[in-house]
Amino acid sequence: MKEKQIKIQVLHLITRMIVGGAQENTLLTVNGLKRIPDYELTLLTGPSLGPEGELLSKSSSFKIKLCHYLRRNINPLFDFIAFCQIYSFIKKNKFDIVHTHSSKAGILGRLAAKLAGTKIIIHTIHGLPFFAEQSNLKNKGYIALEKFVARFTQTIICVSQSIIDQAVDAKIAEKEKFVKIYSGIELIHYKKDPEIRAAYRKRLGIPANSLVIGKLARLFNLKGHDFLLDAAVIVKRKSPKLKILFIGDGILRNQLEKKAKKLGLSDNLIFTGLIRPEAVPYYLQCVDVLAHTSLHEGLPRAVVQSFALEIPAVCFNLDGAKDIIRNQVNGILVSPKNIQELANALSQLLGDKKLRQQMGAQGNLLVREAFGSQTMVSSIDFVYRRLLKSLDSKVTNKDELKQIKKINKKIKKLNKKIN
Image 1 (cartoon, one colour):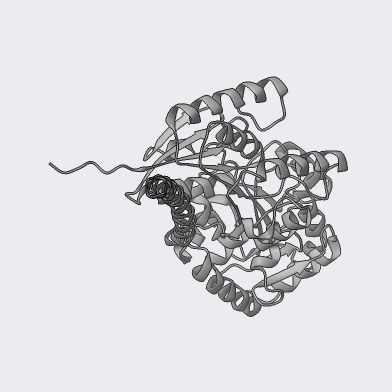
Image 2: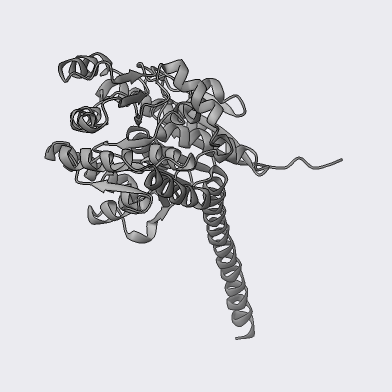
């Protein structure tokens, strides 16, 4: 009779599974690891509240558990109940590895895993919880918490070198504890197709001769849609048939519609509304230049997606932008919040089709080499196996020490008899 294989029990924990970069990364990671026979995967998450949509309906290939009190916003009562639920769940299931994502789940989950006796605790930073646009008091609080839970985290995965540098500067942990693994995408879905471009432009009411600036992001604070609208007023002077395509939905839609009307951009601005992640490659093909104007982003995943379709990008020069934008090679970096620089860079690309094609091709080369989802999953698998091997080595050493102690006792007894 064939002996049943004992699988490595892995828990992934994230605050919520809305339509967003960190969540898509987590879903790709869990689905990818599920294909490796050695692992048994479980996902624990809070409810996906809000207008951003959810991803759980795509997650039927592994176990999913809902922690009802795990929410994004700070709530002392809910947070305490969520912590107790997470602790009980980890303690009961005796996971070999607990891998957390996002700030709230990362803090509560790692502390719960430590108290529950989990041997291997890993955290992925998709974006640091402390940043320039946030109050100094909040930043100090997050840094203190991150330092505390980093003490019993074996490895901290970061999606860009910029995150590692900032975390080390903040003394979250020693540099050796961090590892860079880029956030991957399913490259098979990103193929240029003129027919798809024409069909989706028609669906959105975009004329064939219009140039399109696209922004792929939730309509949410710090995503920088306002900056793009301000810049579009300047760009429109040279490109009167300009269209601005906001791909995504969120709480700021009404506010952005009012601002566009005030700026005289109502006829230029198009909202896709909420779309499924698998539809992103189709809508992106309508775009000629991507604008990434977020003020806080661990790694601009939208830029990676646009590069996969050979679309160049203009990006604020902060956080992980430097990891993927080679200035004037595959895109253009501009000073954060500088409307004139942003407008100039967008106009430069919109006015030169050959330059767009050259930069888009360079971006595509980078993404095909380093940002495939399988590359990401294989790297995480390597981290797991390295830590498991290290754990086995420690156990072996303990066993060896026990044996040595037993032998020493026997030698002492023999010596007594001889004497």
